[in-house]
Image (cartoon, one colour):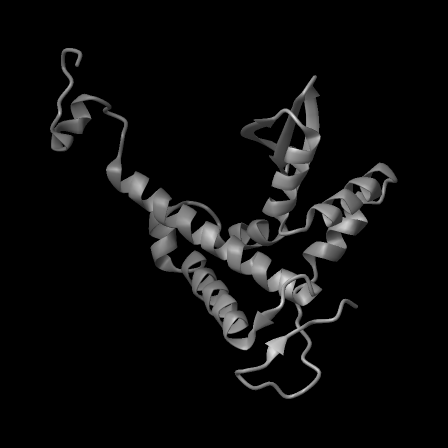
Amino acid sequence: MSAGMYKDPLKAEKVNRHYDPYAALGNAVIERAASDYRNAWLNKRNAARGVNVVTKEQLDTFNREIEADERFFRSDWFKVLSDADGEYLIKHLQMAWYDIFKKGKDDYRVSMDGHILRESFRKKSAAIRSAARLNGLTEEEFKEYLAAKNRGEGEKFKKGILECTEITITKPMTSDDILTVPLE
């Protein structure tokens, strides 16, 4: 341990004067809410696309999580924790798209809206698998996106995926029914 370093966490300001534990806690709360929101949103979107078969209870859980997180992002508490625009964050989480690109020989990367994620992949298939998972797609669907992108139709493909969130139920449902949503 170097001079001036303390083991006592209450004296951490001696180690790093710029570290604010309250700001770190606020950021952790927001990051967790964003992660929960994105996961619930992807699950709901995939149910609407017919990718996932979900029960009514699961769909209700996704909707409750989405509603709770949206309330949080619009709340005064969120404004205390962050200067970010909660409405913008909601839209960003709904519309975020992960893509892959080749940075060098045997170096594939995943990026979100132009921001490169840290992880590097030696194989294109591993990068495709990662980007597909982050987008809530199957690997085959992500490969279809890449083909559409190469044809100049990538934005149209993304729009079709990202805007699919409405679930249509064609018959009265009971709690024991399983929702299957046909693709339109």
